[in-house]
Amino acid sequence: GAESLLGSGDMLYQSGDMSKPTRIQSAFISEAEVKSVAGHLKEQYQGSLDDHVDITDESEKKEAFEAQLEDIEEDEERDELYEDALKLVVNADKASTSYLQRKLRIGYSRAARIMDTLEENGVISEKDGTKARDVLVSKEEVARKYDHIQAPQQDDDTTQKDDEVSDDTDTNNTPPTA
Image (cartoon, rainbow, N blue to C red):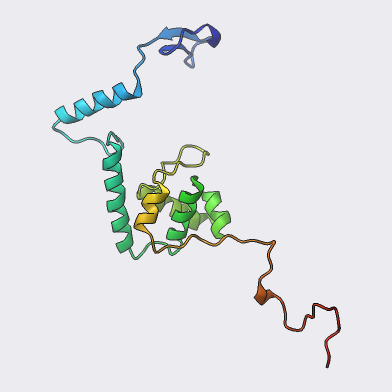
């Protein structure tokens, strides 16, 4: 099994028509080498790349995110809970439809639409099975762009608000007078 593998580039492969895995070896390429080769190819290639190919560096991603946020501010069809959802996912550093449903007390369809919008705007990663999505922007980036947004208030069932205490309740346990 796998305990006899030598390290990076050494692997076991088993296709659907094989009864047991076969050991194969491949060259190991680090992430830095992949980015270097991809950058070189991008410079040399005169055509266009598919939209799903993302070889931009972090500063380009940040600029793209800020440009998208400016576009979002102009979008009047955006869900009124979008900004609350944005704050929630960035502060929690996790994003899922069920998380938005619970925190914003909304239904699945609306939460899913908000998640789609967050993905389109580059705030969260694409869907990967049932795992929670990664948040791609920092709290500082969102705070800079949305400094007017207050974080959504969290419900706290353990505290009693002053307006919830009725006026006819006496703290001395004496009955109200008529």
